[in-house]
Amino acid sequence: MKIKYFGTAAAEGVPAFFCECDICEDARKKGGRNIRTRPQALIDDKILIDFGPDTYLHIIRDGLPLHKIKTCIITHSHGDHFVPKNIVYRATPIFAKRKTELPFYMYGTKIIKKMLFEDSSDYAEHLEKTGELVFTTTEPFVTFEAEGYKITPLKARHGAEEATFYMIEKGGKAMLYAHDSGIFPDETWEYFEKTDVRFDFISLDCTNIMTDSKYSGHMGLKENVTVRDRLEKMGLIDKNTVCFVNHFSHNGLKSYDELVPIAKELGFDVSYDGLEVEF
Image 1 (cartoon, helix red, strand yellow):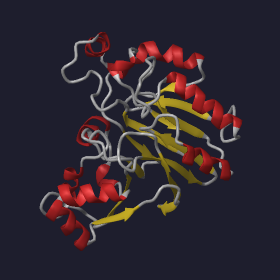
Image 2: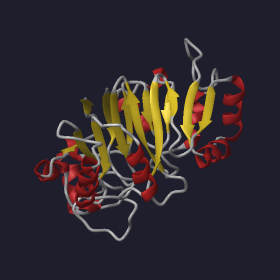
Image 3: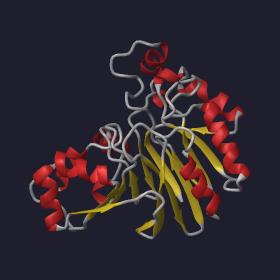
């Protein structure tokens, strides 16, 4: 399996919109891997994770082949992860000319479906009636199959209604994409206790990086170590598991260049926009 990170920031991006902090000024000056857009990832060129505000940028900057992708899974309803209005551009022949009329399969919770059909209104209904859009409502801990992958939504600890993250399995490989969440809620740990999965790859929310936050819906490096160690103790990961941190805020007080050696010392690699990892 492989993952490509297209966006690796929290909601405000790095540099943030109106910010003059040292991290944002450093990112503007240095560019490169210190620039971070809003979160999105692609698994094996097939399974798109989230449909956020920087999707179009990822198409033109990074070559995201959205016209070829037919499966998208949504983590939660926050605007840096889901912009339902843009699904209207799937409509043919008004906005898109296509050689093949393959449906676009979207998976998400009830709140995601509600947002989609409220914000995209007539277009979403049109897409559904014509078969161009097929939406499947997901439930936490209920595995579904898409394009040969077993995908399990897991409950996240995050300030969004029905927030989830995903376990994805195929061909004897398994990965955990755990954003946006603080230390996982009890229900998710209880689910893990009942599973025999072993993760080849994990990607953990690291929004806070070095800072302590009163908000429990994100993690930093300290919490990443706690979660990683608990997963290892449960036998879900081992020394061969590839461990990444992802989803960063400028409020975490470290740029990409500064974070890499700190994370490495703790046993983590650091994501950046455009990074592709095979495992």
